[in-house]
Amino acid sequence: MLVDRYGRKINYLRLAVTDRCNLRCFYCMPEEGLDWLARKELMTYEEMLQICSVMVKMGVEKIRITGGEPFVRKDFMSFLTNLSKLQGLEQITLTTNGVLTAPFVPELKKLGIKSVNLSLDTLDRNRFFAITRRDELPSVLETMEQLLHHDLEVKLNAVVMEGKNTDDILPLVELTKDAPVSVRFIEEMPFNGGGAHPETLKWDHFRILGAIQEKYPDIKKLPDPPHSTAYNYQIPGHKGSVGIIAAYTRSFCGTCNRIRLTPTGELKTCLYGPSVLNVKDLMRANTNEQGLQTALLEAISKKEKNGWEAEKNNTGLTSLSASMATIGG
Ligand code: SAM
Ligand code: SF4
Image 1 (cartoon, helix red, strand yellow):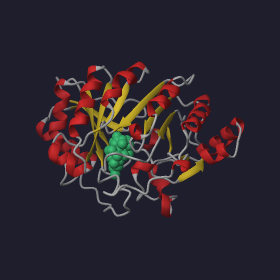
Image 2 (image 1 turned 45 degrees about the horizontal axis):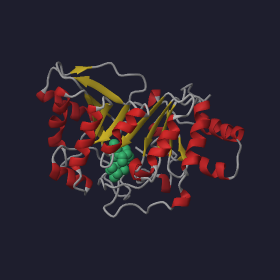
Image 3 (image 1 turned 45 degrees about the vertical axis):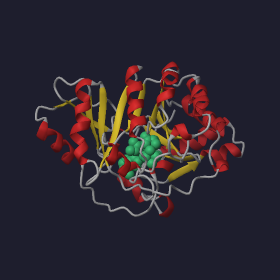
Image 4 (image 1 turned 30 degrees about the horizontal axis):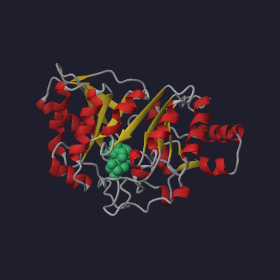
């Protein structure tokens, strides 16, 4: 089973199926996009299924599909259908920007997907354009409606950015009044694919909470589920909840149960650290299942205690100047 040297059971994989995206969120990638990976560098869907199957046998119970934008990869729904048949896998979730997602919601429901994270930093069309450099807010809102209509759990992810969307904090919180959504505010991290990023965080989780408490002083702390990366709250009488994710301050590392696979098969045992193994290369060298298991066990046993420790191992190319689109968030 996958257990690290601190006794943490690793049962959650985040799999980025592509680095490509149809938005250009400025905190994630430059306006011109990234130097997209060549197809042969990407894991094929067959390879992804193979490594997921090995990991599930070793204790992975939940897989989150992310990217880039998962729905821009060709035949994504066929892959998801095959993944949903994997014996022993208890839960599949998705993180999507929602631009192309709405028509697929009934199919997601049929596949047994119960929860979707939708990235939505603002409810204002002009600000949406300023942040994502694309005029796609209506399609994202349509996806949110479809998800709610089909009774899928909806978590909205909003990165909080000084001078960009702090006026959206309260309107996003207000969504929780009538809709059973969890609105999660995320501290901005210095990953933007462009390399240049001031490392000063103006809106940390305390300030975000403070801004909400000014309008809703009776906001209540909810118990946080195990392994939660969010501090969870609820405004009395509201159907939904509010989460704050200290992604930059990293106060959630102690109970970490997750690993990441990038689109090229790089295994990351911490978001903030370097890749520790390339599983695609192993599979292409015809490594058998036993060999894959041994390599995974060894890599995971070295998982760092927390993001600050892991970051010390980062050198050059895998530094925090990489794009989240190549890591999956
Ligand atoms: N394209 C999909 C989406 O946007 O939901 C999935 C991939 S995206 C990289 C996953 C998550 O990472 C999104 O919720 C996005 O807001 C978040 N993200 C990207 N860059 C970030 C940054 N610099 N700081 C904090 N969160 C970031
Ligand atoms: Fe695309 Fe998601 Fe990155 Fe935005 S955050 S550019 S939607 S991958």
